[in-house]
Image (cartoon, rainbow, N blue to C red; front, side, top):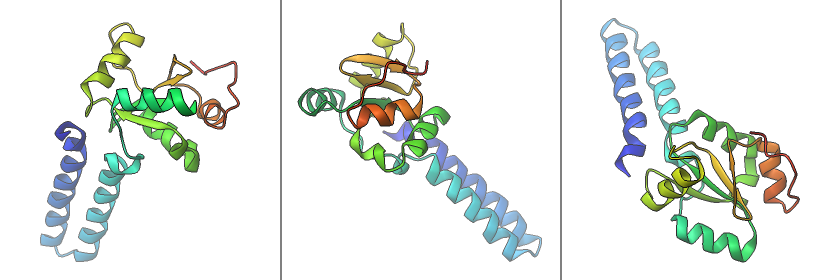
Length: 151
């Protein structure tokens, strides 16, 4: 769990250092803006942007009962962020598994990707799709499973 917060904490720390330097140079307004920018970046790269993560076994159980896709992700991944933001409100229809919080989820991703922890990996009806097109995932989340998964 701690690994997911390293980048956001580093961004806040760097922002604090930059803001302190600007404040000491006599620019309190610039210091505040700098700190806000770093805090905003930290929040985007934190797990807070994603829907609540569940375990891989729970996600697979839920997916079998409701047919919704399972997304394996990790914080700091720009492709996961792209998928999350492009899904918009549809993101809450999916089951999200943070592979840095769930070792079993990481194992599922490695098994699907020849030993690599490549994310986002989206499972639809038990089939893995690595870094799929967000439009396809949105379609899969609404029940209209398309033929092309992107990559």
